[in-house]
Amino acid sequence: MLPKEEQEKSVKIILVAIISALAVMLGVAPAAQAGPTIHVGPGTAYTPYPDAEGYCTIGAVGTDNAARLVALTVGHCHQGAGKAVYKVGDAANGLIGWETDVYSRNTDGTFTALDYAVIRLNPDVVVPSKYSDTTDVVVTTVGDASLSDMGCNHGATTGKNCGIIGKVDGIHLQNWAVMWQGDSGGPIVVGEKLVGLNIGMDFGTQPTTFYGAITPILADINAKDSYGAGFTLVP
Image 1 (cartoon, rainbow, N blue to C red):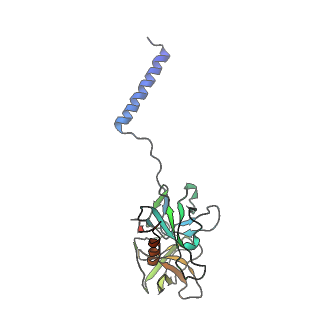
Image 2: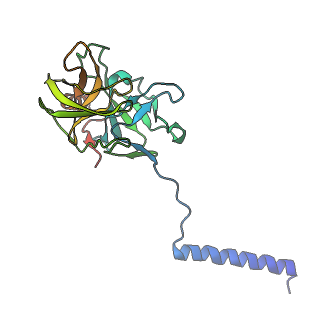
Image 3: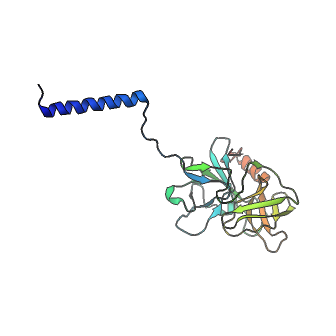
């Protein structure tokens, strides 16, 4: 007969084996890892420098023809391919993506060229969305604007602002909606249709607020056949 200590040890081993077997039979799985938690959509404020002031705004989120999760924003905020970016106020939960080499930067104050950038998003942390998390702006389609459309922009600084589109010149749109520093890159929508990205203001023009029209932006991205090519909005 086994000593008492050995008997207790044997019982413990048997119990562990029984519990393990039951777990397998009942389909009990190990605790799941936490999934993506950071909402990113039209109007999300992002920054490459989470410990410093200054940020820009994301215009739309989607996938490209290589099934990569990407975001559209403005080119004059671009810092360099491979630069990590973070959601403002949520940097502690990880980077939301990286800048790519797909961009076009307009010279400050000229509004004579395309001004956009493509960000590759991190699917491990990002919950991609067509909804803003701070206003009622939603982006469900992409297309062109017409004169006299009511265009509403959404920026991380000033939120949602609307104004009649008073000028369409091919690569740019203009209206009288308000914007300010930090709003660059945010969407301008007609209803739920994305028609452009916010690029700035010129107080010497009428209307004062400029946007890059989305159709020529997407055409230029497609021509580069890299990140963002074949952009399709998230459902």
